[in-house]
Length: 255
Image 1 (cartoon, one colour):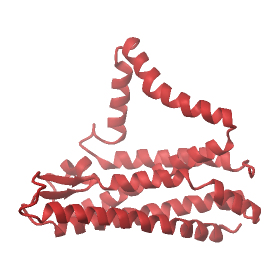
Image 2 (cartoon, rainbow, N blue to C red):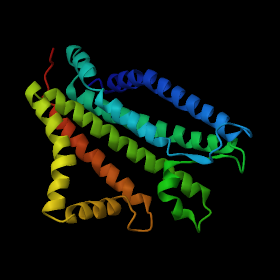
Image 3 (spheres, rainbow, N blue to C red):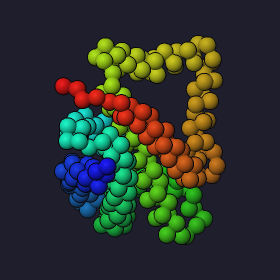
């Protein structure tokens, strides 16, 4: 089935973008820290914090998912690699990259926090600490925080990666007119029509229901519990993986 070949190629294909991404992210973060965190007489006098740099990783993986199908699909099919091997290889690649980035981001958070001077103008706060830091107000377990932080970011990364992959496979299967209609219609429905209907017909009840559902799904109605978010993101990963496979298994090579 050439699964091993599929995984190796897709991991190798992701290597250069990852190196460029982290090089830019770390360099820009270090520059900010040097200009703001260490300078006593800097023109930058505002105290603040570096927050949630993991969001950059999440966006990167979503965008990577958007660009990870067409060329690889054409190459694999033309060289006799099955669609099943392509897709399973993609799932394994997403899992490997997501876990690797989760570990790197966690170590980077610890590094940036360690090099910042105590009481300086700048402090570093990870996305996990921003969202679920209150969970540890009465706890001292560093291992639990480390474990939950890595696991949460891993599930977020795999979920967003597969959303991006589903979108690109969906667009690949669409005709040009359908692509234009979806590109215009979906944002218009979500950001214009739906808020208007909710406001004028439901009196905002729909928006409040969606907000309450999201708060529940990500554990904020249950004492800032990250395991709700982990389950939610794994369900998103499973659903969009299944939908993507339905699109991939009958896809044909296009010029």
